[in-house]
Amino acid sequence: MGNRPTIKEIANEAGVSSATVSRFINKSGYVNEETAARIQKVVEKFNFRPSQIARSLKTQSTHNLALIVPDIQNPFYSRMANRVQHLLLSRGYTVTLLDSGGEPAMEMKCLHVAASISVDGILFASISAQLAILEELEKLRIPVVMINSYDSCPFDSVHGVRCESTYLATKYLIHLGHRRIGYAGGTMHTAIENSRYGGYCKAMQEAGLKVDSSMVFEMGFNSDSGKKSGAYFTALEQMPTAICCGNDLIALGVLQVFQKKGIRVPQDVSLTGVDNIIYGELSSPPLTSVINDSDEFADKAVSALFDRIEGRYTGEPREYRIERQLIIRGSTAECGGERKREEQ
Image (cartoon, rainbow, N blue to C red; front, side):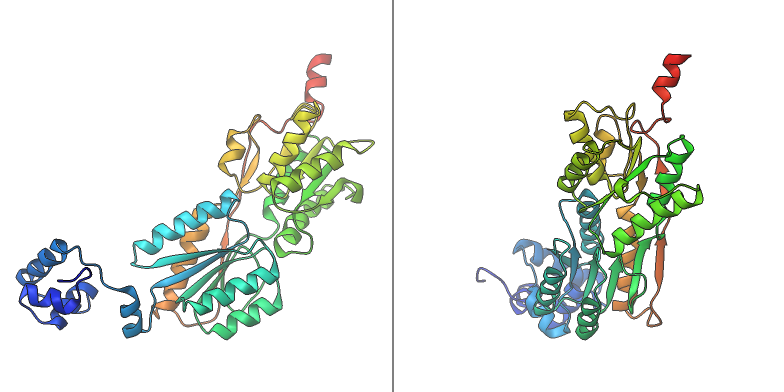
């Protein structure tokens, strides 16, 4: 045999037909136990691996899916990617990971790449809500599941309950007695930021508290933006007693600035985040956050996508909502709690 044995060569060595070897390898038909054992022995002997390209040409399926995320450095998305890969490999599929940087123009390029390699489906996580993106996805005519964005769209979607994460966090800060509550948000005019800011406003308004524009800083969903938020709030004449952050990376950036400037968390300012990433649990103090379970996002998205790929569901777009849960840690405390204890 040559360096890369063919199915025909495997068949000759095993003393069976090429069709029998093909049925065995692709699990596409019956092969009796004795014959299967003989083929398996030859496959192992020559370390045979079927050509995915050849299989794709024959079946018109690449067994490859695209996962497009806005920031693979964000642990929420890196964990999601890890879970997606695990789920796909167990089904005999591979995943092509594309990072859009959260930019609509790059999202469009990622879609073109996915189309050029003929993926069988797309898992698309976006922070924006661009009509042009939806139109481009529809042109591809392949199964798509949207993750973490878009209020309504022509595809199955998986997302958290709208506005709930920052609503829970802000409501808890109000419960602790905070009234001057700031908001450090993400990229303005994106679907996710609109939801996060909306949750903060909802909790404030329900408590009869005014949303002061000077207490709101929206920049981006990374730690560098968090550092800029921290610098902004420390420059205010009167700082907030608590800050609700659009995600954990923002909160950690704010925390870093505060620590450098000697501002104590939570004694001087309480902080909350969203996503419950591992870095927040390991920070000092540990970060109060809202669970945004990336594994659950991946599980539901992959299941929905294969429903479409394998023809189990062909109906109207479905919407899967992920419930939120507040995790209370050391970055939050009662407003003026230390001063109250000193006075007692």
